Amino acid sequence: MTPAGKFLVLDGIDGAGKSSQVKPLVGWLESHGCTVTTCRDPGSTPAGDAIRAILLDRHEIHLAPASEMLLYMAARAQLVADVIRPALARGEWVVSDRYLLANIVYQGHAGGLDPDVIRRVGAVATGGLAPDCVLLLDIDCATAARRLDRPLDKLESRGDEFRGRLRAGYLAEAARDPEHIAVIDAAAEPDIVAGRLRDALAARFPEIR
Image (cartoon, rainbow, N blue to C red; front, side, top):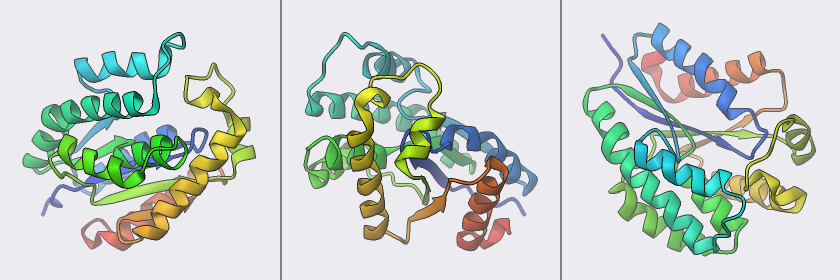
């Protein structure tokens, strides 16, 4: 029997290695008979990709935290409508590189906005669609910074203090909702981290053990 679709999110501070874990995770899910759709937030739609460029690549455009948060929400609303809900309706598994939790942490815990306000705006933008599981890749800030050996986007360029607030925010949110947020030690080699992700999902979803 094909496992019923679930909505999974990979998240964590920049440098935690989440993006590199998408492909092996998808391969493992497919080996268990799952049909998988992948996406990134913001992005994966024409509108989302255009908004992503403003948010991350246009260094000359300064955005207030509220403006930044609302642009993410606009991209996410389109992503949910065009990609995530249709895939779930087809019975597919969805693996997203970031989702609403990133807003709550980046613009909330680290950026100064009220996380609960972001949650309420997020409920409107997503129509209440929440992940079945967020896989939070946790890593110390110094190691994460060393891994960012490429040109940095606007958020990645905000420095060590901002990165520290991000990590603290993510861990606070994980403590707030351990039922849906699984904290994964991401400081090890990629193959080991991939195994930890698989173990966390197998513990939550017996149909893919």
